[in-house]
Length: 203
Image (cartoon, rainbow, N blue to C red; front, side):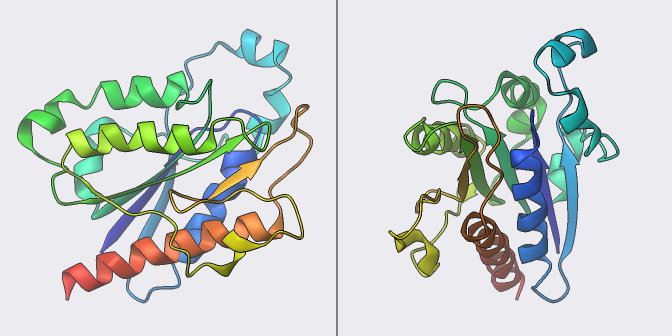
């Protein structure tokens, strides 16, 4: 039973969430969970001008995924920051290259799930995940979200990401806010939830 956690991160927020997703998925016995990233499309010079060079060093050793290997997994949990209410161009470029997998029906029946981040509380988290689902549905994937059995979704004592569509975090306008413990718990819950579905399908 194999799960891929596939992410794109600019300033590290999604990377931290992705690691939590991996932790959660590994809680299910017998689950082989891999963490990989999609290729960066921006030049090092642009990344430096954005002030993201140091942040990206933290996950520079994470392997870059290839399109064809997606078919090797029973589930893929995707992580992408929001860009104007949609996934990043880097993630979209990677998914746009999956036409051969679509033609072969290689992802039909596999579980797909999405987590995200935004600068503000209402910065397009839900629309990013929902629009991401469109791609997964075109591939015939089965969509898993973040059930309300994760009690952290209903807290009102603090600002927090998370919706029934998937785990999320709020980065702040200057990117200084890293995922809270509640947001990381949501990511762990989502990873474990997807892994439990994979295990159930395999039994």
